[in-house]
Length: 184
Image (cartoon, rainbow, N blue to C red; front, side, top):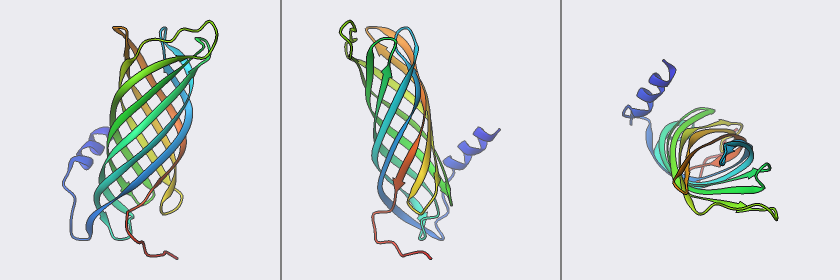
């Protein structure tokens, strides 16, 4: 029931009485656990996201809806295979800010490459990845917050489809690209 309500809320038209168009940069860094590889195995991962968002917000930048175009890079270390999996992806997000909470649904895709790091490790040829998930930010100040990223999808390498995903925690920054009034 909750996913249905969130979908309806994110898809509905925003009220414009006390809002205006805002846009600005966003940056997120995180680390956590993932799964990928053939055979599928656990991985230690990091991600970095940089992008631009635009949407309708109130003047205090406390609540609003937005779309974002984001470049996200995932690097997963697969100790058992002696390889790293590198996935630079282009991501589209739809999110909403509700004072301190910011859930955002996303879809992303791009190339994926296995990089051998040991003398006996062999890397796979270049493949492709597609993922979807939820990025959640709990704002601790006006522009900075703690992030949680949950994603799932597939990597396709050498005509082999394998699951890929992860859970990452970290920090994020986003703000309007205009001068902001100071808050007390």
